[in-house]
Length: 551
Image (cartoon, rainbow, N blue to C red; front, side, top):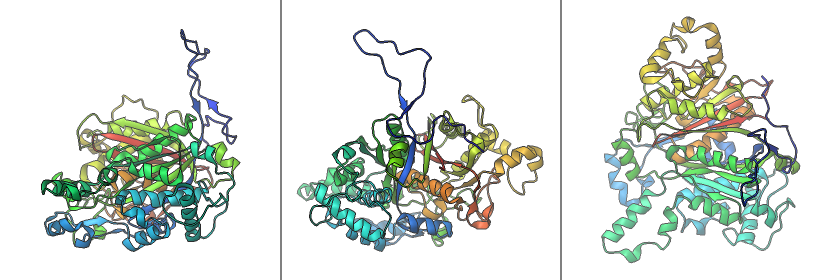
């Protein structure tokens, strides 16, 4: 399958292509010059950093994900802030996805962040670790290496170099960039978009208790910087001296997707050459658990078998499992990346956004918002629904949300050219209709859907990696976009853990024990360029979809 390209491949950053909005030349307004047309530049991913319940680092996380390992475990008292430990036994859900503590502390020590940890919240440290790995991977920033080498030594060297440049972390004397490409001008053209969904509920609770107890002077002077959602982006910018656009979306569980999409648009418009983008989350505490439990959003049935608790698309799912982590990608203008010989994971070709306009926590039952953002990601991208080989679904393991997303994906694949006004053949009035139309293996109704429709659905692998990581809330979209890129780069779609019996069975391409892949990873086409979608949906009805392609 060949993409219908809108852009010529290659070229330097100065060779931008302009999307024509009209055939006539811009008309000057009185007193002003003509409004110039917006540039449209190609954006690729050249670096990747992950900190997840499966491990610290991309290699370890990806290895365990493909192996079908689970990063979820039973919550223990030591996992909670000291003042909250007595509440553990009363929590309805006692399963969580936590970053392995020994790996986390070792990475903090190796990067010289021990001092930083005393004035930074955990979500900031997770983001710093992921950003360090991503920049080292992309060979960009102060002290960047020109060739891949020992990861530990490379990270230590970068920690020393960034300390010399910015005075933050690390140690040692002055260091020059070994890549020969880092300069003040490069720093001005490198920005940061790293978001956070929940910030720090523990920090606020602890400060509130001190204030109410008349102990205001014991509140840390770093209290406000530790709770601001933009401080992960700020910490990354400060550590590396990055002076490009700097922002931090906070859109609940869609945060990571929005961060990557916004950074993509910034480079497209020519406002930066490189963007460090992603999200982090660290709010595993009794307050967050209680809040989500009151919403009846968390799994409560599997406290004694935590590895089975997160089961997206499975008939026995009963809610999501909260996790922590961070995902950071380095996005770069294609010409800039190729000119310096940077490694390229894939290209971001589309970014779709929508709102449900329906309910504060529940998705619209017809799935219109999910369908809209997927169609909008494809619109104007030069990629069609027929080019999609893999979809990393948002599916969190909730009964309603997973069914609605399945119906929306089905509609996208079966009616890719339909207009935005068309309703989804989905959920409340349509998931049942979709099931009757025959979508799942063994449903007995596939013949009624038509052989061609079944083939179209079956050639797209769909999985939710939250079975292995839990739901990382604001960080989920960034981590899962990385998984989608790795899937199309290595042509292996990761499995959905605990998927034994799909319900509803609308998509024959579901990857898992009850679908394709036999419980392991599913192979993707290797003889052609392929595309993937990464979905992220958040409370408030905010939806985003990233369209990613191989190179």
